[in-house]
Length: 229
Image (cartoon, rainbow, N blue to C red; front, side, top):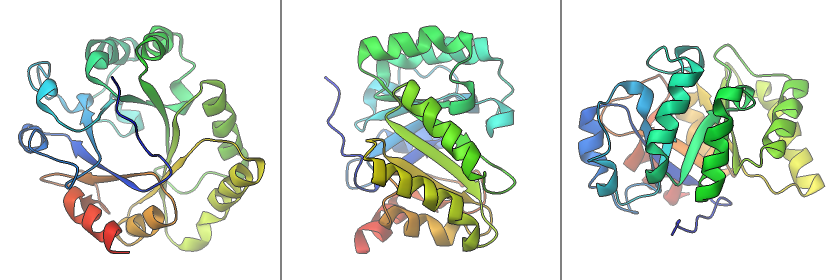
């Protein structure tokens, strides 16, 4: 039975991208994080013996390098890995712009059969997408019944957030029931991630042993910081 999850509060996701992360994630409890994300693209080897030992709900993520992944993986390779680890997942994370790829059709069908939710992601490594792009992402996410839209941006200043604010306003105004996860990469990442969490970002990502990019918080420290507000 899948756990009941409240996406209308800030949740902390502890990211596993190394064997050292995996060893610690097995010991994590609800006081440490709310989810564990397994970055299958990190080349962690055979995960099947370890995943049943994780106590928290699991997000399975398989990215190509072009999406910020750690390995170059063709769509068919990613689809194969998703299907392999789907039995352990509460959620899978797929790039929204790739979700319509025929290679992922079976993945999405099987996820729905199993009651596994889909997190539709978008990464902008250069800045903030315009409102038109964000509106398109929303349409695709609704079409594929995503549980969450996750948008990772690269901020130079907070004025760049205007398109995201407009998207959030539209979702609230039209009463569309789809939670948002917003995070900044780059130099404003560390300052803004707790801020976004307390403004309603539902999934907030932190590393376990070592950061994989600038602007990241350690997961347990991020959870404590959010709870302090």
